Image (tube, rainbow, N blue to C red; front, top):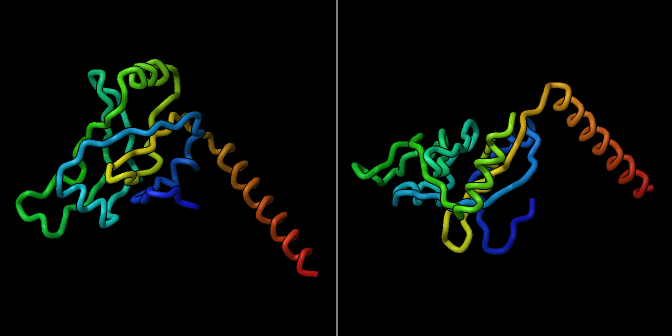
Length: 156
């Protein structure tokens, strides 16, 4: 995947695109402590089981694992603590309305740095059924086969 200029991707939740239909994406800042930032710069984060939720009109990120910083001693952070996400009030209000609808959830897709600030890409998503997942895999396989056949044809 090509990276945009000035963006350093720290972690990506690849399973989210397999398990959910992503309808919209949003960018949110994230409130971190010093040792969390140092761990993120070292690439020690995991978005696998994380999710975002709106609690008391604030956007919170739950279950995101950031490994403790090795030189952090007693100032180290709790790896699975709940972290606050920063978005404009109007965007949060829009998300409140959308997540109240049946089946919509907020899933973090990517964690990255842009211009020195840690950001999270959130996806407004609905869960996929098993047949949807199988259909997506079949389409991906068919596309791969077509590309392979086309490439082999070009070589001849």
